[in-house]
Image (cartoon, rainbow, N blue to C red):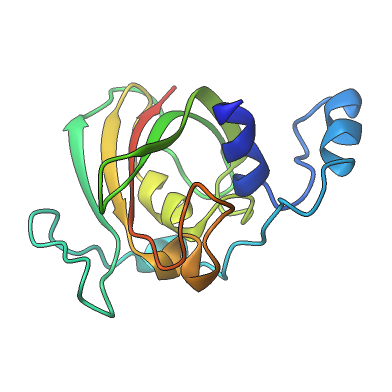
Length: 160
């Protein structure tokens, strides 16, 4: 149930890699689908210091920290990547979703901008923690009851 919640939030349109049956199922989903805000170019990533990340700074940027540096292929714009993840609210550490792996084409704007920017440059086998401000996540609208408006979120990611 939790993985389905994130899939509904992360995907804004039917993904090109999904089989026809999955495409039909996603098209039948109600208005839980949200369109992520426009993402800056993946090459323009201006990450903040991970340790200095502030939930009160209005122009806070994405911050990340590699916990394991992978040895495989590099995640680059245009490539299909698979990411295992756990998402928590930064304010209280409450887990809002977790999944063994979700695949998407990097740069296609099928996921939130914080993922587009934060996954770029990882190597397969790598693990990275992303601290994502609202403007690169779900903004002032939030996402259902799980992610409140203006929430700063944390994702523990592994590139498969």
